[in-house]
Amino acid sequence: MNSDLTKCAPEKPFQARLLGSFLITDPDGSVISLPTQKAKAVFAMIALSGADGIDRSELAFRLWSRGTDLQARTNLRQTLASIRKTFSGEAVVIENFGTALRIKFGAIETDVGALKHGKFTVLWAALDGLGSLLDG
Image (cartoon, rainbow, N blue to C red; front, side):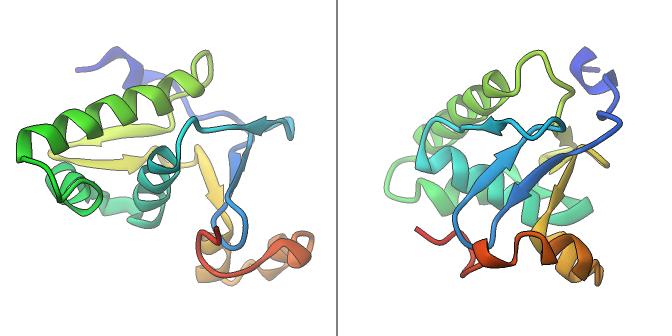
């Protein structure tokens, strides 16, 4: 078992805005900047997949369908490494779940999740920043 998976989620979760301009903040409100558009897309797809997660092969195919399977898996692995490096020193936010990837329970709150669960007061504070999914 990966020892990173045994780390606990932070007491106060990271926040991810997927509606409108993409934004991730740490529990203290500092911005977390993912290095590439593909990293943002990978993170968002995993965050939107819910508790069941998204299969690695499906994720790789959706984002790197022009290359070979091997190239797609390699690109996904490198992108995941860059995302994990961005969160280094923090609690693990993406975990392996069989052949799937998912957000560790309690590690991230998203605006889409707040909407799905009727937590409109969470969205009210960011109402002016909301827009289409992954705008831009």
